[in-house]
Amino acid sequence: MHRNQSKPGSLIDPFGRRVEYVRLSVTDKCNLRCFYCLPEGFKGFEEPGHWLRFDEIERVVGAFAELGVRRVRITGGEPLVRKGLPHLVGRLADLPGVDDLSLSTNATLLARHAQSLQQAGITRINVSLDSLRPERFKEITGGRLAPVLEGLMAAKAAGFAPIKLNMLALRGINDDEFEAMVEFCLEHGFTLRFIETMPVGSTGRHASEHYLDLQVVKQRLAQRFELIPGVMPGGGPARYVRVRGTDLRIGFITPISQHFCETCNRVRLAVDGTLYLCLGQDHKYELRPLLRQGISDAGLKEAILEALTLKPERHEFKEHPGQVVRFMSMTGG
Image (spheres, rainbow, N blue to C red):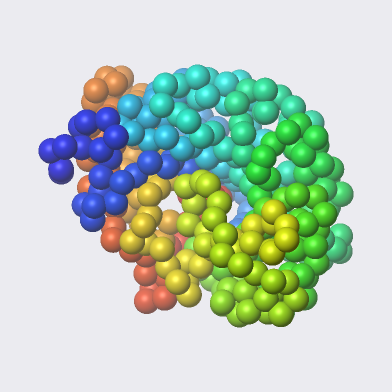
């Protein structure tokens, strides 16, 4: 362990990367069944009694903040199925050091919660949206498109900025909609991000049959839109361009074709208190038993520092695509 890690702002992994971003899963349950995430009929969710309680989540996030973490993204599963989420948001927003509190959602329940989430302290929202065609959306997710669009408009009306749409690029499934999604984002002032498929769990490996190199997507978009270099604030790995003459940023998240492991700045806290140190590896550290055994705040920070020593240098999606067997919803998006 690095001796300087006990100082605030010095959460450094064994490869010299500063960790300042926690992706916090508040549930592994979801009200959609995207074929690349959860199998149809899947019921192997974590028991609610194993979920971290709000006070436990607050303690862990507070410990991370004292160690220098500034960004927290609330994820799932679908986080809005967790009862009382705006209350948790308010508690996390009040923690000293948490400067950026954001949310990833499928937006199906966002219309009824957008205002309360904004008032509680969420400033930025990412929405997964792989198709603008109702029938295709249903084929991909098992759900209805209309509530998602309603949720997006409610988030826009509530004043969230930016609102980022995450579109998984799926060859042979939605690769005829990329330009339409750009136009949709231009119309509504959203940011668009394309994501490559990853072999996480059996569903992810199935989706990888539809893998599409985003360099190809970028070249195709450049034939219709004038793309110039762009930047976007935030803690994520997307590489951005901007459509000339507009404010639209288009990001490309490329874990396969151009991995960004050398700049990885994040860890993932699953709803059951498991700290995952890499999306593409099985390195993990169990915090829930320590919390329920009454660990002190100082001990909790020491446990986080110990966990960080397990963070691997990189994923091995290409070398060992079958290595990660857990579903994405178990890890936290």
